[in-house]
Length: 546
Image (cartoon, rainbow, N blue to C red; front, top):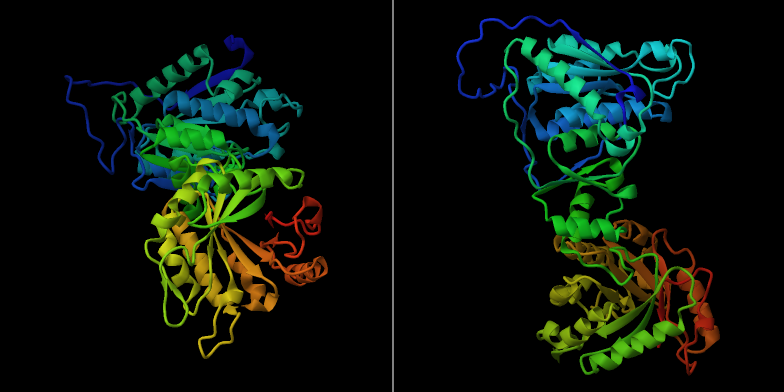
């Protein structure tokens, strides 16, 4: 697009003539307390880094601090977040990318002094200050430039210039008037404007105290920046692009819900992954989501989320023919395809507690190589795109002790656990048929650890009940279910006639803690389970189909 469609006024302030040039010398190395002679960028030491500041200026500052060690040129602007400032933000970002320079903002929690400190840390010699052209907004009308229609409605640009002045750097003033759509869509300045900007910056660099143009710069290698494009994030994203990072947009910061993002992260296998914005969750959650995406495994939902979906289950054990169980699961789920709440996922419940081994004197089972016994059925179900639940009983030992022998199986995507507190035998102190909330919480935390340590998608943890008191202090279950690594389901267990089943369903689902999903196992005296028996209020996440 011709340059006449935008008016960039470049004013170089305080330039002095360059004199006394001596003979050519080796490429200078920047000193920690001296001005930068070329750009120096560093990849993060950690594999994942989350820049989660909510304020644009703070986000931009942390981006600069994360990847830039030295920078002869920095691009400054006042912070804006509204629609009126969109074009100014776009020009600010485009100028930073053109100059391969950090983009910093003055505003919010980042004062002029904070920006001055960053300029000094970078050893900057020139600051390009992006401001609205005052002549275009003098009449108080909205000119579409990204500036507010009156001086009182926008921060004074002098704040950015004051930060540059306090740092003792040369200043190039970039005034923006008419809108230029290509800047916002292509993230770059038109060739003529870019050439003029570079010429003025080079002139400013020549007049700076060191009197030498910047030498060849370093560039980030194998760094992937994941962004959730939001107004105000442009500067931080531009800083990472300018340093050489490759960026990929993840709407809403939902990595697990975007097959495209999962494929991109898996294919990149980047040396470092930087997340930009608070929508990616906590640093620990971001690291787990990235690790999971890098494995590339999807759940039967087509994403790395268990929800939204309805799960319809059939049972199998080590004696079952895997092909028969998988076919039964697929056929049963198809009969329930009309359930609301997302796709219906065939689910195989694999009897694990007594899958192999021998009983002890107290009646508990001692497992012997459970993985070897159960792998054929689990592998067949997963290869068919079905979910798997390991059905683990409750002996006299802690629930965690019952689950631990199956960690190798749990360390596979698409495998969860079903627990039966009412199977608990009395240990001589506590009554039978009960587990404490603390014990159940430990079991859930253990499964969460398997999920996050192995970079797996979330796992389902099913708690079977015919009476809510089988989990002591069940009201606290919502806290245990608050993590993203598990989805907790409390299933009203199969009983006798339909009336008894309805009664159990009402008791178990009444006052179900927030964050916990209901499951339904249907009456045992009904010859055939049918979809029209499934409750709808609330609708169960898990249905025992046979």
